[in-house]
Length: 178
Picture (cartoon, helix red, strand yellow):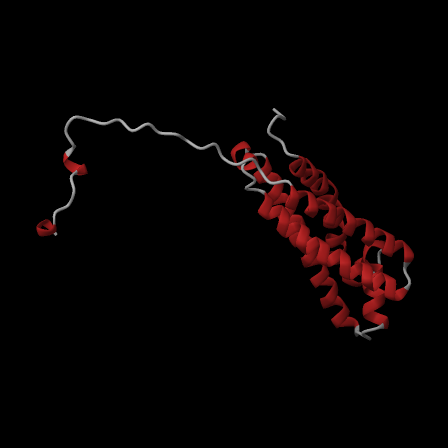
C-alpha cells in the first residue's frame, strides 16, 4: 500500500495533520469573538501590531481579524483538498495533488512570515517562536516538494502492424475530393 508514497506526500500529510486543526480552531475563535480571538496567543502579535503601530480603531480591528481568519481558513481548505487528492492513488502517483499543497504552503508561509515580522516589531517572543516554527515547517515542505518530482509516466511502445491493403478511411485525401 505504501510503495508509491513519496517523501513529499508524507510530509504534506503530516503538515496538514498539524495545520488543519490548529488553524481551524484559531480561525473559529476569531470568527466567534473577533477581538477576543485576535488577542489569543496565536494572533496576539497581529493584534498588538494593528493597535500599536497602525492605530486601528475597533471596527477596523474586527475587519482585520476576519481577514486573518479568512486567510487561515483558506490555507486549511487547501490542505483538506490536498488530503482528499492524496487518497486517490492515480493522482498521488503522478503528483497531481502538489498544486493544492503548493497553494497552501504559499499562503500559509505568507501569513506566518507577516505574523512573525509583526511579532518581532511588538516584542512578543512566544508568538515570534510560534510563527517562526510554522514558517520553517512550511518552507521545509516547499523545498521537499520542489526538489522531489514525481516519477515520469512510462512510455507506451506501440508496434505498427502493416496490412496488405490500406483501409478505406486511411486513404489519402485527393485534391478534387475537398
